[in-house]
Length: 353
Image (cartoon, rainbow, N blue to C red; front, side, top):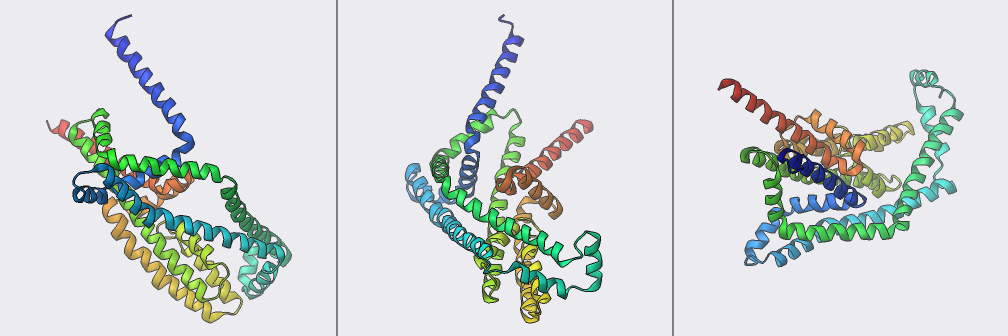
């Protein structure tokens, strides 16, 4: 019973079981824990500067960094979410009450389509206005109902939101205060060489900072510009569409064009040629250039991954993990590449020796 091999295997089994159980306990607040860790990594350089200015007082430096994080990131997001809930609910009420006549919009678009487009639509069983109207009206109503319902669910689940929020803030404070100690303990526990551990941890933190900072700035810029264009052109619910464009801009290359493109086509279809031309030019020259100029500088340069891999990993991550996936996906892809680079280099060195 005291055989060393049996003891080692028993200890490994207990370690694995305890780790799984601990992860299971934390799972209900995975999002809060995840974003607390992400914000701690993102604001770590600022915290180090605060720590040097406050005479190495970690508690006060962490508190000051937390206050800046709340003012610059969390509070604006809460205000945007409140405004989005109001605008989404108002849009849903207009659709239900008939103030926004979807049938009239669809009639104008259907009449403006060329004959070849009618032929293509006929192959999919949408050659009649009644069929097209029924399908698109149901889709639009379902979409607006989804937005309104989820916004109401946020209010109904306010207690869970408040608990998650305070878990995130509480964890963020202690990760800022004791993050270096925790990072060193994790590094010591990983059974790899010192060089490999440094490389992996540097890649991990670099990808998280580049992904969150770069994608957040690109999303905010594209959403703001798109919302401004919609507001100037008199399009309904500009803030709602701005947030949708900001969310979709997390997907490289396509992003916000999935919103402003169909709206521009709709404007052309109903005869608002000047508005359609302005929105198209603004979308290509301003919104599109933000993605083409800022994203490679803020994201690709630090991550050092090709754009297609960033796109695929982002889409896959969001499909599995939801909103958290726009960070988790590129991080997993970057660690995958880093691990295979380490493996291939070690194999080459062993072959050479």
